[in-house]
Length: 165
Image (cartoon, rainbow, N blue to C red; front, side, top):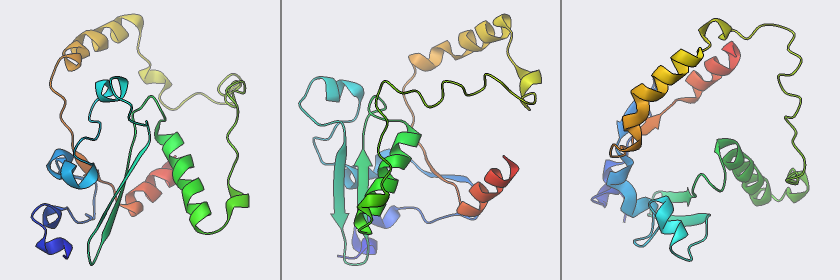
C-alpha cells in the first residue's frame, strides 16, 4: 500500500521551513521498531538483543529505514561515522571508509590545552555554586517520565549554524 493508505504512516510529519517540534515519535514506534524491539536500557541488559538494530518498512511509494541503538554503543558522532561508512559502501567506495581508531588512541587528548583565544561563552561559565544550583534544579528530571519529541531541523538552518560556528 501507499503511505497515505496506512493508518499510522499517513500521519508522518512533513519537513518544515524552520526548526519545529513536529510529532511524538512514540506514535510511530510500530513503524520504526519490531514488536519485541528494545525500548529502554533494561531491554538490552536482560535479553540477547544486539546493540545495533536495523528495521525496514516498505510501502509502494516510500521506504523507512530505521536504526536503533543505545547510547552505550555510540553517540551522535559515532552515528555519523556509521552512516558515512554505510553510504560509501552502498556507493561501492569501500576503500574510502575511514578506519576506526583503537581504544588506546585518544585523538582529542590535546584539544583545548593550548587555546589561542578565549571561548566565546567563557563569561557564562558556571561557578561551583551555579553548578550545584543547576544540578539541584534538574534533579527531578531523573525521576520524571521521559517525553520524546520528533524535531525537524531544515538543512538551511543547519548551514547557517555551521557558518556562524
